[in-house]
Length: 173
Image (cartoon, rainbow, N blue to C red; front, side, top):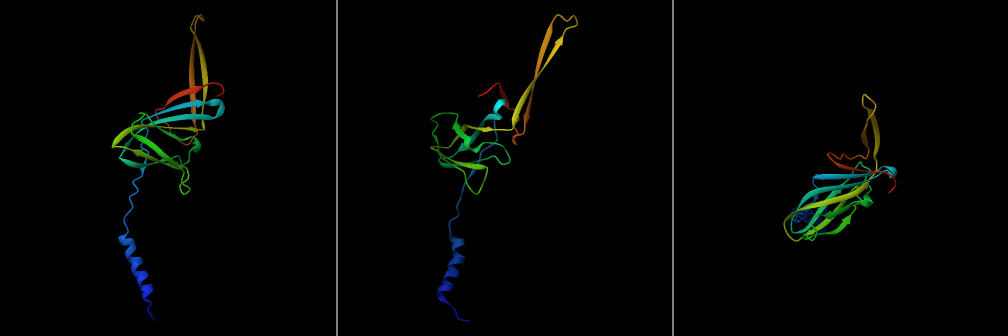
């Protein structure tokens, strides 16, 4: 068996490279849980505007944020990130929809300092509807009528919106 010195060198380098290559620290943060959520349900169009408020801690430099909506009916083209405090030293540099992670996106946010900031994520989803029922109750003498209204909201969007403020829109957009 003959030994090839070039082959031996490549094998030796192949063993060393993984050990000596600098580790990459991808410091990616998933967007934290909602603090508040507001739904505006347009029943006639099967469309709901969602506005979520969250608090995010940023460090100086580029901060990658990941937002995911797996198994939901969120329209990815409508997802938007805004800072609640304008001119807070924060800037969204870009939005990326990675091909290897469907139903998620990444924002790169530049911060000029360590800070905690309130952000708003808004988007449209479908699968949420409402219907109103009314009950008229007459008094014993049938001289006065009391009207009570009830609203049922059905959520088949694939996302839970606990403790949401809800606005119901009647008619077309």
